Length: 246
Image 1 (cartoon, rainbow, N blue to C red):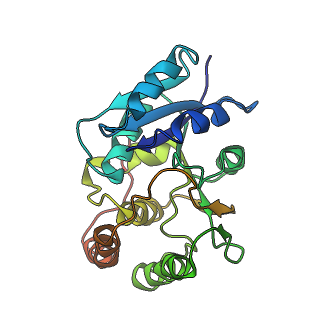
Image 2: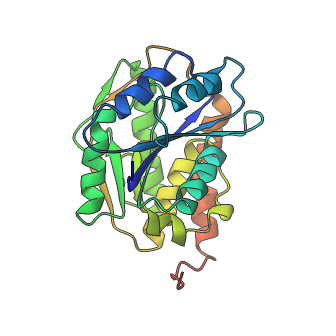
């Protein structure tokens, strides 16, 4: 079945969630293909996806990588795959249901109607987070305040990982120059998209913390984001963001 939209789901040990999230995406009237980028999950996540591929022939795709190489590199791998296969709308979404698949259509609609990047935002209308401890809510919220202060970009949810890109954005950004792999990756991609002059909008969503599986958040990822924001800003001073013909 033809589709112009693909949802990239990076996985590492998501056996509790992966079948349910795939089935949920395919349950909607809107046609979305799914690409799972699995980093050698020892729990058999990729095997579950392979089993489902016979049921969702041509709709469900799997790219397996050897070892845990990081969120950012998984998405870059997925972006390149999606561009090679000529998808127009390219989504980022977590496997753990913290992002509601029902919001995929809202993000796509924003891009169809003029946005180049639509962000599923937890903070565009207050704080819309369910089941997070207050300490994590405050850390996430003030991380975005910090990003706005350092970089000057007016994004309320700078670390958001639920997004829809038009293919032109990912064709324009030199993906091999994106260097960060954790939350700083999400910040770097938004910052770079804005610096290239693309139209970025935030769509309010409700973010619900995972109930199955284990969070991949770590102190190392947080430190990368904190120092990475400064590095991203400093390096941008010497970088050319003019668009070149594709």
